[in-house]
Structure formats: structure tokens, C-alpha cells
Image 1 (cartoon, rainbow, N blue to C red):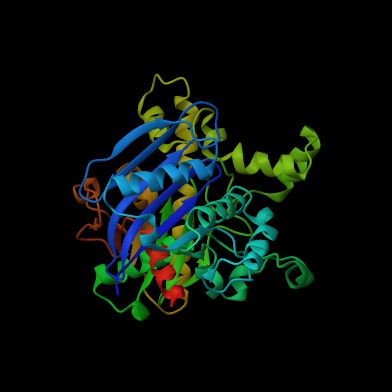
Image 2 (cartoon, rainbow, N blue to C red; image 1 turned 45 degrees about the horizontal axis):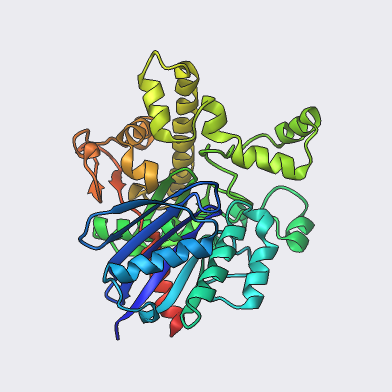
Length: 405
């Protein structure tokens, strides 16, 4: 029996959603709100399947106002005749720790557990819970489901998720590598197997999820074996405003010279670092690429170095995980690029692949400048290079239907 399911990704000042008819997996509507709770007007947009995107400026003092408006245009667009048609709402939650091995129904107890993990995902978990509570008020008869970024990575072996610190810190405080973007890595690795015409159980893929938040994952037989993000989403690659991997002594040294407490230091490495700090002016890769190309840009020299750092770190992790696949007795079937930068920046893809000569990776220049799901492999490449747009919302909708029973 068909039913309508919402997939939601709530940020601290943003909200994105898609409406699907399930299990047919037909997308009916998508909407987004940015600069919620900010002073002045925020950005609001929506699009019915097959229609043009409508963009508005609205005052949205809180998430409930934004949700109310999105549901209003959902009805006006004809995607639903009444919001009561929506039978389930699936919510992206970044950090589920070791408490959640699968997606789960939203209960007061489960929300308390998520809030206890806020320090592991300070930019995300509080906002995710805010979204759950807001939708629970507006759509009280819909099943609310929690879909975690971390669940996919629960298959990692101890050798890859433990840190070289006393075992008691893991046993007592659960300090370990958790990773993130699991929903995206799962979708892309499964889609890659289909593109390759292989069974998932016989496929080994390195997925590069490159956006303002970014991570690389080694996926073998459909299971995450290693991933670049760590205890929190701050580890691994250089990101928009996050440091990625860094000598921990740099952190303690900066604390001393700047007189920061733990919260202040966390704010510095998660919100004030990464490409924003390295370029000196922007965390938006489009701005960075423009500055790199424009020799007269006031931040040109700094942008060039930062961009090279970004590319090199991505190639380093891909090479590391490819070597791990080979050490396990398998071949790397594909390197798959996804997410905002991975899907849209042909320059980033080319420069990363250029650094993967050790893998015999080469891309087709013409194919690399096309959009959508595409094989960009050159004829003489020893490994497939794919671009696969991620569908995190669809994965959330699938789990929502499954848990509704």
C-alpha cells in the first residue's frame, strides 16, 4: 500500500525536506529554509516534482514557523491535499554513538540518549532533535523515525575504530571513531555496485563524500570498513570550517596562548577553521576556486595553498583506503565522488584523480564535465571513477517505511 513519507534534515538555522510516495520511491516535493531564527528575512524555496523552483524571502523566527510554511506550500502545490496524508517523518540524526545499531523510532528515551551525545556532534545533534520535536508537534499522528549517520560505520573492525589511548577510555567513555555521512556512503556504495553491474557482496568501493562537511569511506561488500571522520565530525579531511586531522598538541598549545576553555576551543576547530581559515576569506568551494583562478584576487596566494591542501588530503585518504582494500585480498572496483563538491566540481575531481597515479586512476576529461550519475573513467584507467549524486533523503524514507512496519 502506498503512503507518503517526509525525509527531514534539520540544521541549527536551516531545514531541508523531501516528500516521497513509498514504496514506489517517487519524489513528490522538496523544500528548504535557510537563516531560520536569524534577524530579518531568511531564504525559503520549494519545488513540486516536474515544476519550477519557487524562491521567497520570509521571516522565520523559529523552526516551527518554517515547518508550518513548508507544510502550507506542500498542500498549495497539490503534493498532498491534507498534511494528515503524511504517515511518517524520517529525521537525519548525525550521532548515535554505540547506543544505536540501527535506525529507531522517536521516543522520549531515545531523544534523551541523542541529547547526551551532543558533545560528539555539537553542530548537528541539538538541531536534529529540535527538528524531531517541532515535527512531532505539527504532525502528531505521523510516525517519527530517527536515522543515524553513524549506524553504517558500526561494522568497522576494532583495529580501525579504536584510538591508541588506554582501553578504559573506550570501555568507560566510548571514545572511538564513529564517522558520519553513513546514510550517504551506504546509498552511494550500493548505487556504485549497480552501475558496475556487480553484486554488492562482491564490490569494493572508496566513496568520497565532499561537501562543506566531507568524509571518505572504504566500503567492502556493502559494509563500512574505515572512514575518515573520527570521534566527532571534525576529524579527517579539511572541511569548510573544520580542521580535519590535526596534531592534538596544536589544540593544547592554542588553548594556552589564546586562553580558551574547552567550549571555546571546540568552537575554534569546528566553526572557525578549515577552508575558511586556510583561505582567509571563505568556506565556499565556489569562491575558493574563483580565487585560485583569479591571479588578482586579494586572497589568491592563500587560496592556492589552501586548495592544494584540500585536494592532497582527499587523495591521501583515498590512497590509504585503496591500499587497505588490496591488503585484504580484493581489488578496488571504483572511486565514487558524491555530495555538493564531489558532484559539482569537475576541477576538484580532476585534481584528486591526478594525484592517484599510484592506483592507475585516470578520468575522461569530457565525461568529467557532465552532470548526474556518470562514469568518468578514461579507457586506460585501472580503476573505475564514478560520480553518483547522493540520495540521503531517499535512504531516510526507506528506513521510515521499514520501521513503521
